[in-house]
Length: 108
Image (cartoon, rainbow, N blue to C red; front, side, top):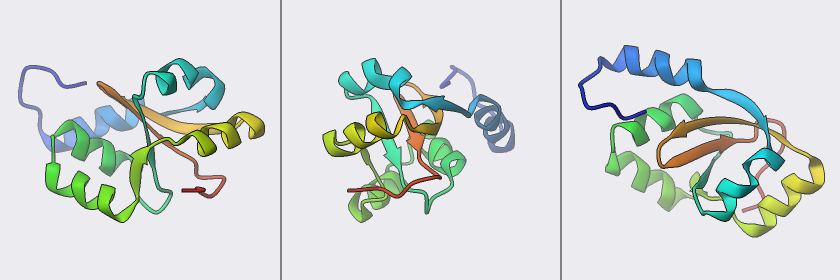
């Protein structure tokens, strides 16, 4: 996602929106195993979080991390999503895959 040229924020947000899709958690297992899946609380706007990640906005990301609104997916959450055969919203902001469960609540 992070090309070697500057992009207008609105253009980048539109690109993020166009690349956001629903995916079954089972299809993300290899990425989860590699530690590259980040869970975004349903309280946050997934596109705004993805935009902050794409812009390397350390202040916003650190704030969300400290508040527990953004974090790597934990084992208990991953297992729950396997059992539920959960379908999540996801977007790739390399090297991360950001996921959000709008249907269920987080267990962390």
